[in-house]
Length: 241
Image 1: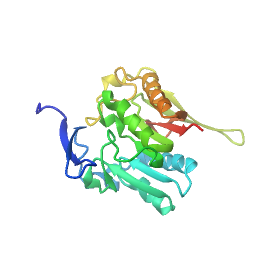
Image 2: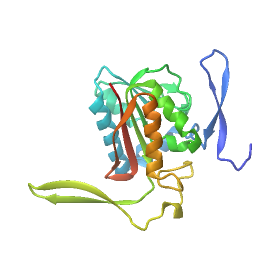
Image 3: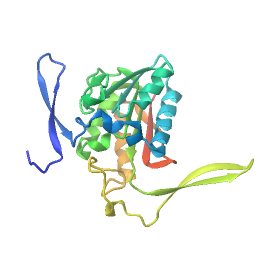
Image 4: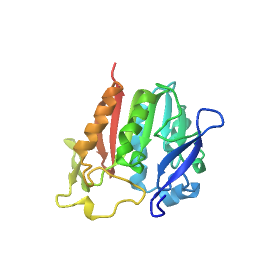
């Protein structure tokens, strides 16, 4: 393998006893030490606001008897809140250092079809090459039985505005920066792609999401950018009855 490559091979146990699968993974995602996710180092007010949206979207669609799988455990904050609230939560991550309940790749989720009512996958899929995006999405929708909630990085800068008129209007809006070109600025070195960088415009990414979802009987309920953290773009899919 080219030493300059930001990829490496990760070996994990397959479902067949004793057999090992060779899985190609991006960057350093399976070896980040747990300490890198410490609250004081990793979590700012912007990320904290995204946890709010993750939790809110999951609670909107889930009952306490629904099984929930988070792919990409990260800090563990989402799981801690859901479990404290009495929800049936499990986590899966490629990185065993984060102590997930299940170690596995989003490219080959080690569960049967419709195993979980709700799947959450937040700021994960950009760590895979874009040509693997469709396959990873297929795995999410295959394993979900009720809803899939995803967030992806949107590199198009936007300014938040809050319109407030007492008793008349309370509205939060995002206004894109007209002359901001994401390609002129560096991307997170652990990301392979981001929305609105290069050829990955929002229309193209959204179309791919919807096309894959449709194959598994899901439709896009809504999508939005987090007002407090416009870098995080949420997509909420519900299974059609």
